[in-house]
Length: 190
Image (cartoon, rainbow, N blue to C red; front, side, top):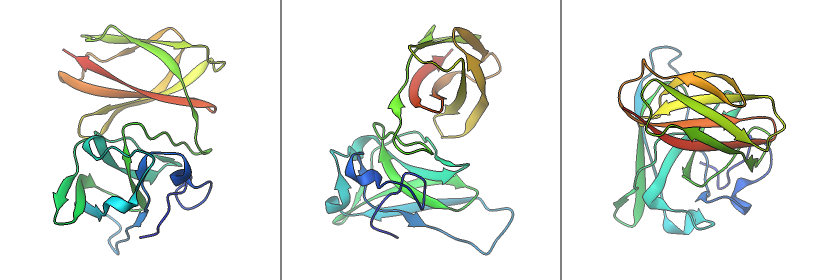
């Protein structure tokens, strides 16, 4: 474990200067190269929490594919004088960090928030994506279920729709990103 969180996993600006997070990076390795599926638990003390970190809405983020991923937030558990959190279904290893739902990191460092409308919400068959004031004509879109599994990965143009008819009913997160901005929104599929 290192006492810092880098915007690019192991390099880049220190995110602990401005972002709400636990000021530590866990480096996990395994000799197994295939068939890995583990539940990982991390622990930290309150003095490691910076920038109004909210442990009631936190998650373990995994740095992979050149960015920190999004995972469903939950409350940390108190374990003696420490706090802990578990992430289920880890299938690869690289840097891990603990963020809250307001932490914003991207491969190029801290990105600005992208303003968009996601509608209808709740939705049944499609969600519409309308990006406000973004110069990008094509925006990356990833949809995650509440377990943090990516269920959609593609691109959308401003004022386009995504077919969600094949998704089970429930709450989802859609992460929109461009080279200059990103944001995450919640929506319900019913």
